[in-house]
Image (cartoon, rainbow, N blue to C red; front, side, top):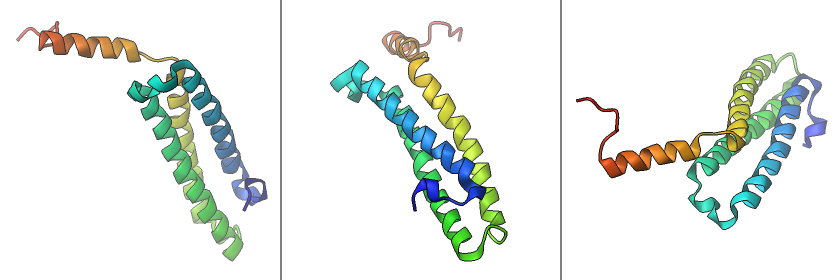
Length: 129
């Protein structure tokens, strides 16, 4: 069913999903406007988007499964599934928040520069061995 039709016991988790989907659409649009076709080479950015999408995919499946359990047995009987959904949603929200934040505020170019320098020197500059 539609997210607005979710049982009140899991409404907060459905809201988290809806907000994250909107935020993902905005972030993806921003990244594509910034990088265009060069997005293919931006592995850090695409990895973050992929990790957000994975969390959203699992959250969507879990929401659906818990709603089906509530429909079949009632919210009281589905309390174990609801608890699992709450725990997963809380953890996913933390991960997604960090990934969204690091899309715009990150050390990607610095990390890339350090890696390229280490490859060129065939060592890290601060190695003492």
